[in-house]
Image 1 (cartoon, rainbow, N blue to C red):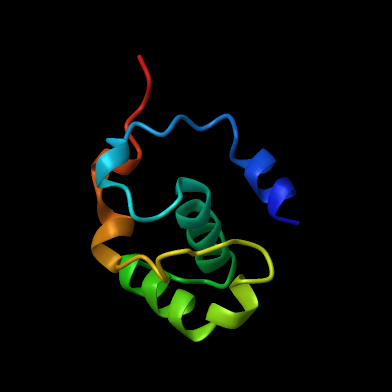
Image 2 (spheres, rainbow, N blue to C red):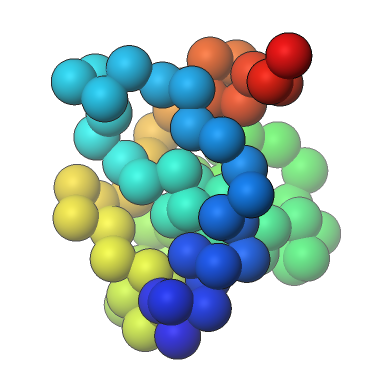
Length: 83
């Protein structure tokens, strides 16, 4: 399943500086997508869903450093557009 999720987000370029990265971009995007599907409204909801559904999420994504904080979801540098 993780391969399918990685493939789903494979076209999205990760512009973050590798030495500053704690969370995989596909993990962040998957939690964000799940939050939106479940009527989540904001970045705090993304963090809350991650914490509440941690064991379930582990069936699909790795989360090697746990659940990203709401600040991580909100970080604009995670989602810059390519030129």
